[in-house]
Image 1 (cartoon, rainbow, N blue to C red):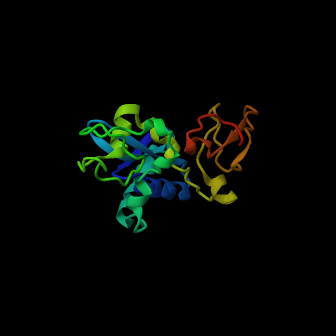
Image 2: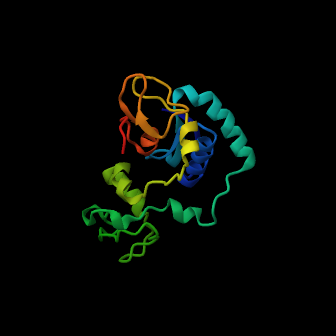
Image 3: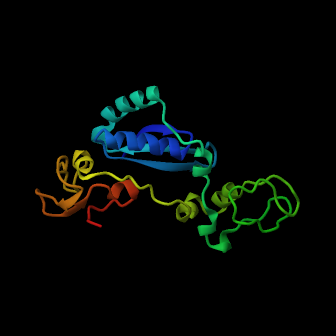
Amino acid sequence: MATAATFPTLPEAAAAAEYLIRSGILASAAQVNDVWKGSSARVEVNQSDLERARALMDEFHKEKADLQDDWEDQTRPDLSALDPALAPACPNCRSILPLDASLANCPACREPVDVVSLIVARHGPEALDACYEPHDLNLNERELEDLHASCACGYSLHGLPGTGTCPECGAPYNKIGPLFGDRRDEQP
């Protein structure tokens, strides 16, 4: 997969990825947490679709993403899904902080805290995987057929249903599996 665009927030990247999907390009949005650069999100596409995807991203930027008013809340992970053992300590007083992404100050010492950043710094961004629900694309069969995806053997699946058997190699495939981190070409 290649990066077609980078956005400050995951909802913006998800809106852009959905725009590409509706334009027939297999795309996904991914959160990027970098200790030095901070958090951002990127839109990934197949290398063969990169040039077309970037052209469509130019159109997307001109139209401006139609984000809901609560986009900031959408980017906040639901930390209640985490193992309580991952709860970080306040850097100032060492009290264990509640697993609450909206917490701005330590309940014990009132110093500013960022619970999400503390978890990522100690356990890595993967620790937050359980906090985000998968994005439901709600694609109809025609939109699935229009996706530009390839089987593991390299055969183009454009024009074929969302799931099935590759006519070239006979392997089962699932066009939207890669959108949710499933790099295997297998049916659900």
